[in-house]
Length: 193
Image (cartoon, rainbow, N blue to C red; front, side, top):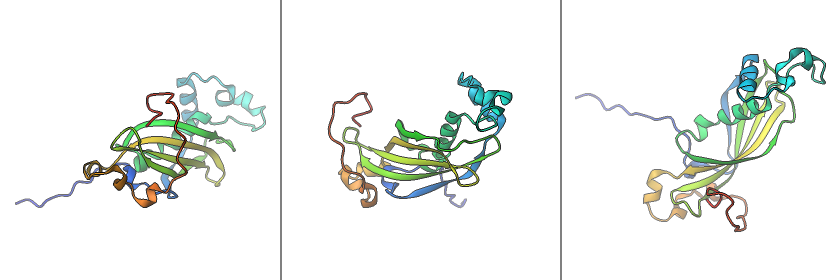
């Protein structure tokens, strides 16, 4: 008889596995290249000369082309997927507080970390919860180049929804979130989640 092999599927975290205050360091970092900048800028129809025109950018305050900040944002969020949301995300609900306090240049390496700031069960979608994350991107010198808050609708652990009350499925650490929001009329189908 053949030995039993344990199969482990790489996935993100379920609602119950998130802990408010936990900080995830996403590695490896991602070194930005000129090709990334040109391809991303042209694919998104962003003709900003600060990204595409080296001669023009050389005359500007930073003296060289800047990485497209939307590439920086997308790469920062993307670097968190394997560790946090792969296969456990229902939908991304929104991004906020997006800032780029220091430029990123081709040749810089982007390192991302994510702090979990709020976890709660959905009031209208059984078996799902809402997780708020604060993403921070730093270059190889530790300078913050990007920050964003992300809110995601996440799946609860499959066995948790079958175990009875949804309130029992969120750990005390996960439920230690900010004060509840005031009720309001939904602006989109996902907002009342």
